[in-house]
Image 1 (cartoon, helix red, strand yellow):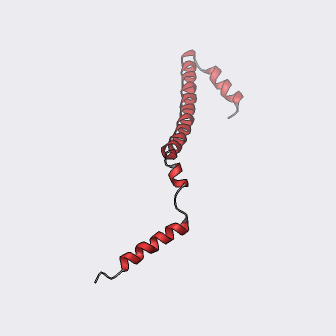
Image 2: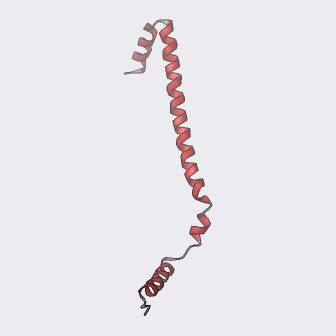
Image 3: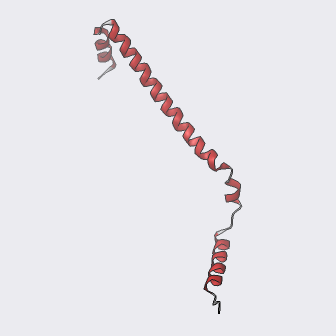
Length: 82
């Protein structure tokens, strides 16, 4: 439906219905804008939730160090206790 068709139909409506159409359009715009704001806030909340741990992750062991520690634990676990 083109903009001209929409305007033609809108002009045929009584004044009371035109006001309802205006209110509905305002509602739709508000809903659209609030959804976009909510999505932006959700993304920033997720980033903020883990930002305090960022340094811990960056200073963590390398894969080789983790493998070494796991091998060490396996050796201790499999050791005979008798």
